[in-house]
Image (cartoon, rainbow, N blue to C red):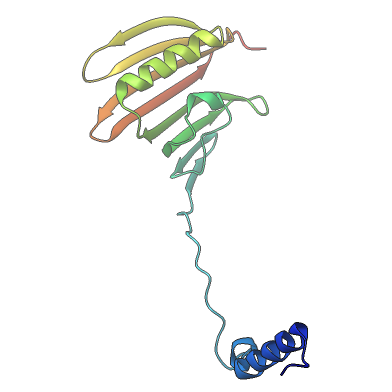
Length: 172
């Protein structure tokens, strides 16, 4: 042992450890079981909306989103749209009336402040407003040719909002 250098001793100790603990570095090669079925990937499927049409009237239950005739900011992103209706006009891509009913987790007072801020920030004009504990009502003039009625009802966990939009004769 006297003639061996430190590096030779270290090298022999490392070789001994590697051979002794070979199972640490061994990998189990497991072949895949080709006969077992692939795992089924489940994704949450939303209920398909039910669409009813008669002449120029369209009613949609449980839609994915609100109709395009209602300004998009008036339906908050976290809300659940229960149903909407649209009454088409004689002109292409124009609606006479639209109704949207949705449920939101926000309380009635928060929704009141939300709509008051939204109406004032976009420069719309509140024609009439009425507040009570049972419901709040806003009548809003939008772009001088649409009138939007907003009704907010309190619920146990949030509120239910009803939007009614009517296009007046003073359009385009």
